[in-house]
Length: 407
Image (tube, rainbow, N blue to C red):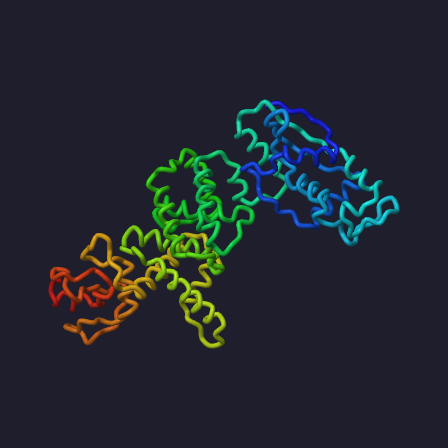
């Protein structure tokens, strides 16, 4: 990799607009506020120093911005009259510049702007993308980059798969949060990590960083990759339109729910029912938040789980159990894929929450049961064609279940 330093007047930067790529895939999105932009233009008009730009030379006439993306975009936008100078800007050489577009400046002030020289360091004769990405990260060292922005600059098959998932229609059209500073990539990466761990696990930034490093050679045709895309496809059908309520914590919670359901249960053609299940819960949750009286303790705990350490294993485990249990109660006819005679953990929880007491009453009078002490019994015995579904299950104490005999 070789470098050369050249001075470029602002006028030349504007002429080269179509030849400069400000958005290579490792770059972060434009995040500058208008006040930041106004300060840069004010700095140029006053002849003060602006930090160097770094470009990668693609060919003789085309370049890629390594560092200085926000600044060069700002220069172009001001030259195109996209924003005004600050309303409280001080005069320059006795000339009032406050609240003015570029076109409103005097000829003298326009010359100050267009003739200002920007130091540009051009990197050329490089074929190693990893070197360029490393340079980008080092140049950002003094600027606050979000963790996902740093991961986006890594060279990794996992990074490429995350980007691919973040462009899925579920993210681009259905979720209720914008893709600011790679927010869609962050949630997509967390979903992938959940799948790699076969369910709830810590999905904090340190865990995601390790995933990118440990899976640099990730195979996009692997069973894990296919499962991620299959789950996103199903979620995309559940949420048939943009859903403002679908914030990141809901997207992750319902990813876990759908992933588990697809593995263990028959949920063919249930997309509309699951969407209504989501909306009913969200409406109930909002009503409980407004309730001036005693609130549903489970809803209060849900609020806590999505407000504090929402990316921890314990929070994700709780939310998955919570929704699986409510799902089992709401849809008791849903069958296990393998028609196992044993009720699943989630089915047992749904039966227990529904019944609470022994329903057989052979050795007891219907005593209250703790979940850990409950047996789940088939109403119509499995041996006689009874299905292993919540509606064909009932809570029983172990003594009554044993007295009834095998079913």
